[in-house]
Amino acid sequence: MAPATSDTARWTQATVYPDMWVDPDDDPRETDAQPVGERGILLDHLRGYRLTLEMKCAGLDAEQMARRSVPPSTMSLLGLVRHLTEEERQVRRVMAGEDAPKLYRTQGDRDGDFNGAVADPAVVDAAWRQWRTEVERTDRYLAGVTDLATTNAGHSDFGPEPGGQIPLRDILVALIAEYARHCGHADLLRERIDGRVGQ
Image (cartoon, rainbow, N blue to C red; front, side, top):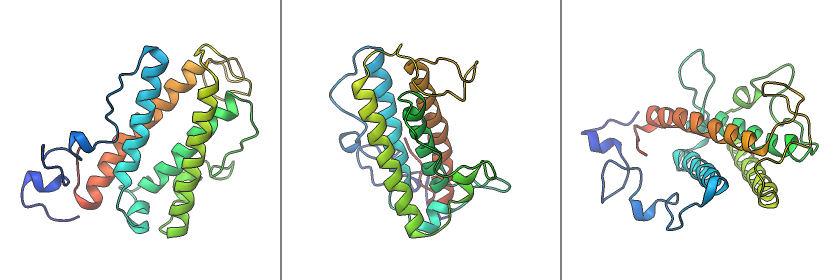
């Protein structure tokens, strides 16, 4: 970890507020548009967490992306990208009923998204490409479905009744919760790598 000479040295290049990751005017998560209604608010939160994940991983090399947290955990920033790719993929598998098998997890390795997160630039590049592809596919699906009460066309393997009907609202909230949880992990992982902390 890079040594910090003061509390503010742990933060980034923000100049207006030195205790922030980026200045408010440069923060891609901030827009002038206010989300409207439940759907708009949910999509705005999803967008913000996706951008936070990208920001927390920005500027890192393959070794840093794959660096594990603390034993016995296999969690890494790269593992989080791969894990959240699987979560994005689940939206179209469950809601649209598309044939979208898991990319990293298998019956033999249920933590393959984390275990396979190795310090190889090709693995990192492939993970980001796949994540962006799945984000685009999720967004395409969401753009075509305006009613949050729409239920799944595919098999749901989670919820109170696996295999039952689940509304888009629940899937969307679950996806946001996954991002929120793992962006918290990303905060700690990034701080451990180079000392950077922030919003």
